[in-house]
Length: 437
Image 1 (tube, helix red, strand yellow):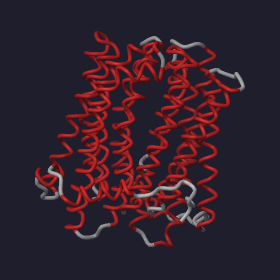
Image 2 (cartoon, rainbow, N blue to C red):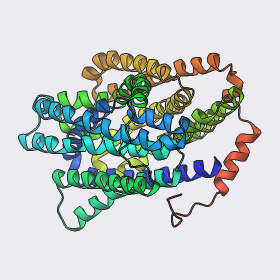
Image 3 (cartoon, rainbow, N blue to C red):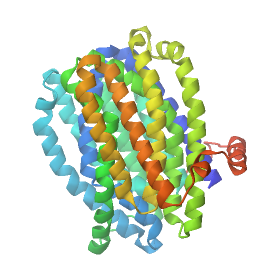
Image 4 (cartoon, rainbow, N blue to C red):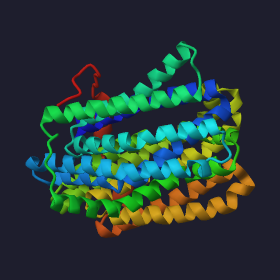
Protein backbone atom coordinates (compact mmCIF):
# COMPACT_ATOMS: atom_id res chain seq x y z
CA UNK A 1 0.00 0.00 0.00
CA UNK A 2 2.83 2.39 0.92
CA UNK A 3 4.50 2.14 -2.47
CA UNK A 4 1.20 2.60 -4.32
CA UNK A 5 0.26 5.62 -2.21
CA UNK A 6 3.72 7.12 -2.70
CA UNK A 7 3.55 6.69 -6.48
CA UNK A 8 0.04 8.15 -6.63
CA UNK A 9 0.98 11.08 -4.41
CA UNK A 10 4.05 12.04 -6.44
CA UNK A 11 2.12 11.58 -9.67
CA UNK A 12 -0.48 13.97 -8.26
CA UNK A 13 2.27 16.51 -7.63
CA UNK A 14 3.64 15.98 -11.14
CA UNK A 15 0.15 16.39 -12.62
CA UNK A 16 -0.50 19.42 -10.43
CA UNK A 17 2.61 21.08 -11.83
CA UNK A 18 1.21 20.49 -15.33
CA UNK A 19 -2.18 21.91 -14.34
CA UNK A 20 -0.58 24.99 -12.80
CA UNK A 21 1.58 25.55 -15.89
CA UNK A 22 -1.40 25.14 -18.22
CA UNK A 23 -3.47 27.46 -16.02
CA UNK A 24 -0.71 30.08 -16.05
CA UNK A 25 -0.22 29.82 -19.81
CA UNK A 26 -3.92 30.16 -20.64
CA UNK A 27 -4.41 32.94 -18.07
CA UNK A 28 -1.48 35.01 -19.33
CA UNK A 29 -1.97 34.41 -23.05
CA UNK A 30 -5.74 34.70 -23.23
CA UNK A 31 -6.35 37.30 -20.51
CA UNK A 32 -9.32 37.22 -18.09
CA UNK A 33 -11.94 37.43 -20.87
CA UNK A 34 -10.31 34.75 -23.03
CA UNK A 35 -9.79 32.55 -19.98
CA UNK A 36 -13.51 32.89 -19.25
CA UNK A 37 -14.43 31.91 -22.83
CA UNK A 38 -12.19 28.83 -22.71
CA UNK A 39 -13.74 27.81 -19.40
CA UNK A 40 -17.27 28.18 -20.79
CA UNK A 41 -16.43 26.04 -23.84
CA UNK A 42 -15.01 23.23 -21.71
CA UNK A 43 -17.53 23.51 -18.89
CA UNK A 44 -20.75 22.30 -20.50
CA UNK A 45 -19.41 19.20 -22.34
CA UNK A 46 -17.69 18.19 -19.09
CA UNK A 47 -20.99 18.56 -17.27
CA UNK A 48 -22.88 16.49 -19.84
CA UNK A 49 -20.18 13.79 -19.75
CA UNK A 50 -20.51 13.63 -15.98
CA UNK A 51 -24.27 13.21 -16.20
CA UNK A 52 -23.91 10.59 -18.94
CA UNK A 53 -21.57 8.41 -16.90
CA UNK A 54 -24.41 7.06 -14.69
CA UNK A 55 -21.89 5.94 -12.07
CA UNK A 56 -20.54 3.14 -14.26
CA UNK A 57 -16.94 4.14 -13.56
CA UNK A 58 -17.55 3.80 -9.82
CA UNK A 59 -19.11 0.38 -10.43
CA UNK A 60 -16.11 -0.73 -12.46
CA UNK A 61 -13.74 0.27 -9.67
CA UNK A 62 -15.87 -1.50 -7.06
CA UNK A 63 -16.63 -4.75 -8.91
CA UNK A 64 -13.19 -5.19 -10.48
CA UNK A 65 -11.92 -5.57 -6.92
CA UNK A 66 -14.81 -7.80 -5.84
CA UNK A 67 -15.35 -10.13 -8.77
CA UNK A 68 -13.13 -12.99 -9.89
CA UNK A 69 -10.25 -12.09 -12.20
CA UNK A 70 -11.80 -14.01 -15.09
CA UNK A 71 -14.71 -11.56 -15.09
CA UNK A 72 -12.56 -8.46 -15.70
CA UNK A 73 -13.13 -8.60 -19.45
CA UNK A 74 -16.90 -8.78 -18.83
CA UNK A 75 -16.80 -5.73 -16.56
CA UNK A 76 -14.73 -3.76 -19.08
CA UNK A 77 -16.92 -4.77 -22.03
CA UNK A 78 -19.99 -3.68 -20.09
CA UNK A 79 -18.29 -0.37 -19.42
CA UNK A 80 -17.34 0.20 -23.07
CA UNK A 81 -20.84 -0.60 -24.35
CA UNK A 82 -22.40 1.61 -21.71
CA UNK A 83 -20.10 4.52 -22.56
CA UNK A 84 -20.96 4.43 -26.26
CA UNK A 85 -24.71 4.13 -25.70
CA UNK A 86 -24.76 6.85 -23.04
CA UNK A 87 -22.63 9.34 -24.97
CA UNK A 88 -24.84 9.67 -28.06
CA UNK A 89 -27.97 11.25 -26.53
CA UNK A 90 -25.93 13.67 -24.43
CA UNK A 91 -24.00 14.87 -27.47
CA UNK A 92 -27.32 15.55 -29.21
CA UNK A 93 -28.72 17.34 -26.17
CA UNK A 94 -25.56 19.43 -25.89
CA UNK A 95 -25.68 20.45 -29.54
CA UNK A 96 -29.29 21.64 -29.13
CA UNK A 97 -29.03 23.50 -25.82
CA UNK A 98 -25.57 25.06 -26.19
CA UNK A 99 -26.82 28.33 -27.77
CA UNK A 100 -29.23 28.82 -24.86
CA UNK A 101 -26.64 28.06 -22.19
CA UNK A 102 -24.12 30.41 -23.81
CA UNK A 103 -26.38 33.15 -25.10
CA UNK A 104 -24.02 35.87 -23.77
CA UNK A 105 -21.13 34.52 -25.88
CA UNK A 106 -20.31 34.97 -29.56
CA UNK A 107 -21.47 32.51 -32.20
CA UNK A 108 -17.84 31.53 -32.74
CA UNK A 109 -17.47 30.51 -29.09
CA UNK A 110 -20.73 28.55 -29.21
CA UNK A 111 -19.53 26.71 -32.33
CA UNK A 112 -16.36 25.59 -30.55
CA UNK A 113 -18.36 24.50 -27.55
CA UNK A 114 -20.35 22.28 -29.91
CA UNK A 115 -17.16 20.89 -31.44
CA UNK A 116 -15.88 20.07 -27.96
CA UNK A 117 -18.91 17.79 -27.43
CA UNK A 118 -16.78 15.03 -28.98
CA UNK A 119 -15.12 15.05 -25.57
CA UNK A 120 -18.15 13.21 -24.12
CA UNK A 121 -17.57 9.72 -25.66
CA UNK A 122 -13.79 10.12 -25.31
CA UNK A 123 -14.15 10.94 -21.63
CA UNK A 124 -16.62 8.15 -20.84
CA UNK A 125 -14.49 5.50 -22.54
CA UNK A 126 -11.34 6.79 -20.83
CA UNK A 127 -12.89 6.85 -17.37
CA UNK A 128 -14.19 3.30 -17.71
CA UNK A 129 -10.82 2.01 -18.88
CA UNK A 130 -9.19 3.93 -16.04
CA UNK A 131 -11.66 2.42 -13.59
CA UNK A 132 -10.38 -1.09 -14.31
CA UNK A 133 -6.73 -0.25 -13.62
CA UNK A 134 -7.68 1.67 -10.48
CA UNK A 135 -9.97 -1.06 -9.19
CA UNK A 136 -7.24 -3.67 -9.65
CA UNK A 137 -4.70 -1.27 -8.12
CA UNK A 138 -2.57 -1.30 -11.26
CA UNK A 139 -1.23 1.99 -10.00
CA UNK A 140 1.64 2.42 -12.47
CA UNK A 141 -0.73 2.22 -15.43
CA UNK A 142 -3.36 4.32 -13.68
CA UNK A 143 -0.94 7.12 -12.91
CA UNK A 144 0.71 7.06 -16.31
CA UNK A 145 -2.72 7.73 -17.83
CA UNK A 146 -3.08 10.74 -15.54
CA UNK A 147 0.30 12.04 -16.65
CA UNK A 148 -0.57 11.75 -20.33
CA UNK A 149 -3.75 13.82 -20.07
CA UNK A 150 -2.28 16.56 -17.87
CA UNK A 151 1.13 16.91 -19.49
CA UNK A 152 -0.21 16.28 -22.99
CA UNK A 153 -2.39 19.38 -22.64
CA UNK A 154 0.43 21.41 -21.12
CA UNK A 155 2.93 20.47 -23.82
CA UNK A 156 0.32 21.32 -26.43
CA UNK A 157 -0.11 24.79 -24.91
CA UNK A 158 3.64 25.31 -24.88
CA UNK A 159 3.79 24.42 -28.58
CA UNK A 160 0.93 26.80 -29.26
CA UNK A 161 2.94 29.59 -27.63
CA UNK A 162 6.21 28.67 -29.37
CA UNK A 163 4.59 28.64 -32.82
CA UNK A 164 2.59 31.81 -32.06
CA UNK A 165 -0.80 30.17 -32.58
CA UNK A 166 -2.39 31.58 -29.43
CA UNK A 167 -6.19 31.35 -29.49
CA UNK A 168 -9.02 29.79 -27.55
CA UNK A 169 -9.59 27.40 -30.48
CA UNK A 170 -6.05 26.00 -30.35
CA UNK A 171 -6.32 25.49 -26.58
CA UNK A 172 -9.50 23.46 -27.10
CA UNK A 173 -7.81 21.31 -29.76
CA UNK A 174 -4.82 20.70 -27.48
CA UNK A 175 -7.14 19.49 -24.71
CA UNK A 176 -8.96 17.12 -27.06
CA UNK A 177 -5.70 15.63 -28.36
CA UNK A 178 -4.41 14.98 -24.83
CA UNK A 179 -7.61 13.11 -23.95
CA UNK A 180 -7.46 11.05 -27.15
CA UNK A 181 -3.86 10.06 -26.43
CA UNK A 182 -4.83 8.95 -22.93
CA UNK A 183 -7.65 6.79 -24.30
CA UNK A 184 -5.33 5.19 -26.86
CA UNK A 185 -2.81 4.32 -24.15
CA UNK A 186 -5.45 2.72 -21.92
CA UNK A 187 -6.89 0.71 -24.82
CA UNK A 188 -3.43 -0.64 -25.67
CA UNK A 189 -2.82 -1.49 -22.02
CA UNK A 190 -6.15 -3.34 -21.76
CA UNK A 191 -5.34 -5.28 -24.94
CA UNK A 192 -1.95 -6.29 -23.53
CA UNK A 193 -3.60 -7.52 -20.32
CA UNK A 194 -6.13 -9.52 -22.31
CA UNK A 195 -9.10 -7.62 -20.88
CA UNK A 196 -10.44 -6.17 -24.10
CA UNK A 197 -12.79 -8.89 -25.32
CA UNK A 198 -16.38 -8.85 -26.46
CA UNK A 199 -17.69 -10.51 -23.34
CA UNK A 200 -20.87 -8.79 -22.18
CA UNK A 201 -22.97 -10.15 -19.31
CA UNK A 202 -26.39 -8.68 -18.65
CA UNK A 203 -26.59 -9.85 -15.05
CA UNK A 204 -23.30 -8.18 -14.13
CA UNK A 205 -24.31 -5.11 -16.12
CA UNK A 206 -27.51 -4.90 -14.09
CA UNK A 207 -25.48 -5.10 -10.86
CA UNK A 208 -23.15 -2.41 -12.16
CA UNK A 209 -26.01 -0.05 -12.91
CA UNK A 210 -27.57 -0.84 -9.54
CA UNK A 211 -24.41 0.24 -7.73
CA UNK A 212 -23.66 3.02 -10.21
CA UNK A 213 -26.99 4.82 -10.03
CA UNK A 214 -26.72 5.03 -6.24
CA UNK A 215 -23.27 6.59 -6.55
CA UNK A 216 -24.21 8.65 -9.61
CA UNK A 217 -26.55 11.05 -7.88
CA UNK A 218 -23.77 11.78 -5.42
CA UNK A 219 -21.23 12.15 -8.24
CA UNK A 220 -23.44 14.65 -10.06
CA UNK A 221 -24.12 16.52 -6.84
CA UNK A 222 -20.38 16.57 -6.14
CA UNK A 223 -19.61 17.85 -9.60
CA UNK A 224 -22.32 20.50 -9.30
CA UNK A 225 -20.92 21.51 -5.93
CA UNK A 226 -17.58 22.02 -7.66
CA UNK A 227 -18.86 23.61 -10.86
CA UNK A 228 -22.33 25.08 -10.26
CA UNK A 229 -20.84 28.45 -9.36
CA UNK A 230 -18.91 28.55 -12.64
CA UNK A 231 -21.92 27.35 -14.61
CA UNK A 232 -24.11 30.12 -13.21
CA UNK A 233 -21.36 32.67 -13.88
CA UNK A 234 -21.00 31.41 -17.45
CA UNK A 235 -24.68 32.20 -18.00
CA UNK A 236 -25.07 35.48 -16.09
CA UNK A 237 -21.69 37.14 -15.56
CA UNK A 238 -19.17 38.60 -18.04
CA UNK A 239 -16.34 36.27 -19.17
CA UNK A 240 -13.81 38.49 -17.37
CA UNK A 241 -15.29 37.76 -13.93
CA UNK A 242 -15.45 34.07 -14.75
CA UNK A 243 -11.76 34.27 -15.68
CA UNK A 244 -10.91 35.78 -12.28
CA UNK A 245 -12.84 33.06 -10.48
CA UNK A 246 -11.35 30.18 -12.49
CA UNK A 247 -7.82 31.35 -11.68
CA UNK A 248 -8.74 31.39 -7.97
CA UNK A 249 -10.15 27.86 -8.30
CA UNK A 250 -7.05 26.65 -10.15
CA UNK A 251 -4.72 28.04 -7.49
CA UNK A 252 -6.70 26.69 -4.53
CA UNK A 253 -7.15 23.30 -6.20
CA UNK A 254 -3.51 22.46 -5.56
CA UNK A 255 -4.47 21.47 -2.03
CA UNK A 256 -6.63 18.63 -3.32
CA UNK A 257 -3.72 16.65 -4.74
CA UNK A 258 -3.23 15.09 -1.30
CA UNK A 259 -6.87 14.09 -0.95
CA UNK A 260 -7.03 12.82 -4.52
CA UNK A 261 -4.07 10.49 -3.99
CA UNK A 262 -5.43 9.12 -0.72
CA UNK A 263 -8.96 8.63 -2.09
CA UNK A 264 -7.59 6.89 -5.19
CA UNK A 265 -5.95 4.22 -3.04
CA UNK A 266 -8.55 4.21 -0.27
CA UNK A 267 -11.62 3.28 -2.33
CA UNK A 268 -10.34 -0.01 -3.83
CA UNK A 269 -8.27 -0.82 -0.74
CA UNK A 270 -11.30 -0.66 1.57
CA UNK A 271 -13.56 -2.45 -0.94
CA UNK A 272 -11.08 -5.35 -1.05
CA UNK A 273 -11.14 -5.68 2.75
CA UNK A 274 -13.48 -8.40 3.98
CA UNK A 275 -12.89 -8.00 7.71
CA UNK A 276 -14.76 -5.33 9.70
CA UNK A 277 -11.73 -4.61 11.91
CA UNK A 278 -9.50 -4.17 8.88
CA UNK A 279 -11.89 -1.56 7.49
CA UNK A 280 -12.07 0.16 10.88
CA UNK A 281 -8.28 0.50 10.85
CA UNK A 282 -7.93 1.71 7.28
CA UNK A 283 -10.64 4.39 7.31
CA UNK A 284 -9.25 6.52 10.19
CA UNK A 285 -5.69 6.00 8.93
CA UNK A 286 -6.53 7.48 5.52
CA UNK A 287 -8.57 10.26 7.11
CA UNK A 288 -5.88 11.30 9.59
CA UNK A 289 -3.21 11.36 6.90
CA UNK A 290 -5.39 13.61 4.75
CA UNK A 291 -6.65 15.81 7.60
CA UNK A 292 -3.31 16.91 9.02
CA UNK A 293 -1.38 17.22 5.77
CA UNK A 294 -4.19 19.32 4.27
CA UNK A 295 -4.39 21.49 7.39
CA UNK A 296 -0.72 22.34 7.10
CA UNK A 297 -0.97 22.83 3.34
CA UNK A 298 -3.98 25.15 3.65
CA UNK A 299 -2.25 27.38 6.21
CA UNK A 300 0.84 27.74 4.02
CA UNK A 301 -1.18 28.43 0.86
CA UNK A 302 -3.37 31.08 2.51
CA UNK A 303 -0.26 32.90 3.72
CA UNK A 304 1.57 32.92 0.37
CA UNK A 305 -1.43 33.58 -1.91
CA UNK A 306 -1.16 37.43 -1.99
CA UNK A 307 2.41 37.16 -3.29
CA UNK A 308 2.42 33.98 -5.36
CA UNK A 309 -0.86 34.20 -7.30
CA UNK A 310 -0.13 37.53 -9.08
CA UNK A 311 3.42 36.40 -9.84
CA UNK A 312 2.21 33.15 -11.43
CA UNK A 313 -0.88 34.33 -13.28
CA UNK A 314 -0.11 38.00 -13.79
CA UNK A 315 -1.01 41.30 -12.14
CA UNK A 316 -4.30 41.32 -14.04
CA UNK A 317 -5.55 38.65 -11.62
CA UNK A 318 -4.99 40.49 -8.32
CA UNK A 319 -8.78 40.48 -7.84
CA UNK A 320 -8.57 36.68 -7.56
CA UNK A 321 -6.46 36.75 -4.36
CA UNK A 322 -9.16 37.09 -1.64
CA UNK A 323 -11.41 34.67 -3.50
CA UNK A 324 -8.57 32.14 -3.71
CA UNK A 325 -7.92 32.36 0.04
CA UNK A 326 -11.54 31.49 0.81
CA UNK A 327 -11.48 28.69 -1.75
CA UNK A 328 -8.35 27.21 -0.15
CA UNK A 329 -10.33 26.64 3.05
CA UNK A 330 -13.18 25.27 0.95
CA UNK A 331 -10.70 22.95 -0.79
CA UNK A 332 -9.69 21.53 2.60
CA UNK A 333 -13.29 20.47 3.24
CA UNK A 334 -13.95 19.27 -0.31
CA UNK A 335 -10.77 17.17 -0.25
CA UNK A 336 -11.70 15.70 3.12
CA UNK A 337 -15.13 14.90 1.71
CA UNK A 338 -13.48 13.06 -1.17
CA UNK A 339 -11.56 10.82 1.22
CA UNK A 340 -14.63 10.21 3.39
CA UNK A 341 -16.78 9.44 0.34
CA UNK A 342 -14.16 7.02 -1.01
CA UNK A 343 -14.19 5.19 2.34
CA UNK A 344 -17.98 4.98 2.38
CA UNK A 345 -18.13 3.73 -1.22
CA UNK A 346 -15.48 1.16 -0.33
CA UNK A 347 -17.87 -0.11 2.34
CA UNK A 348 -20.47 -0.65 -0.39
CA UNK A 349 -22.64 2.26 0.80
CA UNK A 350 -22.50 4.78 -2.09
CA UNK A 351 -25.96 6.11 -1.26
CA UNK A 352 -24.59 7.68 1.94
CA UNK A 353 -22.01 9.75 0.09
CA UNK A 354 -24.81 10.65 -2.32
CA UNK A 355 -26.89 12.01 0.55
CA UNK A 356 -23.96 14.14 1.67
CA UNK A 357 -23.47 15.59 -1.80
CA UNK A 358 -27.20 16.27 -2.26
CA UNK A 359 -27.33 18.12 1.05
CA UNK A 360 -24.28 20.15 0.05
CA UNK A 361 -25.75 20.89 -3.38
CA UNK A 362 -29.01 22.13 -1.91
CA UNK A 363 -27.13 24.51 0.35
CA UNK A 364 -24.98 25.67 -2.57
CA UNK A 365 -28.04 26.50 -4.68
CA UNK A 366 -29.69 28.47 -1.88
CA UNK A 367 -26.54 30.40 -1.02
CA UNK A 368 -25.70 31.18 -4.65
CA UNK A 369 -29.21 32.58 -5.10
CA UNK A 370 -28.68 35.03 -2.25
CA UNK A 371 -24.92 35.71 -2.39
CA UNK A 372 -23.93 35.69 -6.08
CA UNK A 373 -26.06 38.68 -7.24
CA UNK A 374 -24.82 40.84 -4.35
CA UNK A 375 -21.21 39.75 -3.80
CA UNK A 376 -20.45 38.23 -7.24
CA UNK A 377 -17.42 35.88 -7.24
CA UNK A 378 -16.73 36.43 -3.53
CA UNK A 379 -20.28 35.30 -2.75
CA UNK A 380 -19.75 32.15 -4.83
CA UNK A 381 -16.59 31.31 -2.87
CA UNK A 382 -18.36 31.72 0.49
CA UNK A 383 -21.25 29.54 -0.74
CA UNK A 384 -18.81 26.75 -1.63
CA UNK A 385 -17.08 26.96 1.74
CA UNK A 386 -20.30 26.65 3.75
CA UNK A 387 -21.70 23.84 1.59
CA UNK A 388 -18.53 21.71 1.74
CA UNK A 389 -18.20 22.12 5.51
CA UNK A 390 -21.77 20.96 6.15
CA UNK A 391 -21.29 17.91 3.91
CA UNK A 392 -18.07 17.18 5.82
CA UNK A 393 -19.94 17.12 9.13
CA UNK A 394 -22.60 14.77 7.73
CA UNK A 395 -20.10 12.24 6.34
CA UNK A 396 -18.08 12.29 9.57
CA UNK A 397 -21.24 11.67 11.58
CA UNK A 398 -22.11 8.60 9.49
CA UNK A 399 -18.67 7.00 9.77
CA UNK A 400 -18.39 7.65 13.51
CA UNK A 401 -21.69 5.87 14.16
CA UNK A 402 -21.76 3.21 11.44
CA UNK A 403 -18.20 1.99 11.90
CA UNK A 404 -18.12 2.48 15.67
CA UNK A 405 -15.21 4.89 15.33
CA UNK A 406 -14.32 7.47 17.93
CA UNK A 407 -13.54 11.08 17.11
CA UNK A 408 -10.20 10.61 18.86
CA UNK A 409 -9.26 7.75 16.56
CA UNK A 410 -10.24 9.78 13.50
CA UNK A 411 -8.36 12.94 14.48
CA UNK A 412 -5.53 12.33 16.95
CA UNK A 413 -2.28 11.35 15.16
CA UNK A 414 -0.91 7.90 15.88
CA UNK A 415 2.64 6.61 15.89
CA UNK A 416 1.83 4.62 12.77
CA UNK A 417 0.95 7.88 10.98
CA UNK A 418 4.36 9.36 11.76
CA UNK A 419 6.05 6.22 10.50
CA UNK A 420 3.89 6.25 7.39
CA UNK A 421 4.81 9.85 6.56
CA UNK A 422 8.50 9.12 7.17
CA UNK A 423 8.34 6.17 4.83
CA UNK A 424 6.51 8.22 2.20
CA UNK A 425 9.21 10.89 2.35
CA UNK A 426 11.92 8.24 2.07
CA UNK A 427 10.27 6.51 -0.85
CA UNK A 428 12.20 6.98 -4.05
CA UNK A 429 10.02 7.55 -7.02
CA UNK A 430 11.64 7.32 -10.44
CA UNK A 431 9.48 8.18 -13.46
CA UNK A 432 11.98 6.27 -15.57
CA UNK A 433 10.63 3.01 -14.13
CA UNK A 434 8.07 1.09 -16.09
CA UNK A 435 4.53 2.35 -15.52
CA UNK A 436 3.04 -0.99 -16.49
CA UNK A 437 2.97 -3.83 -13.94
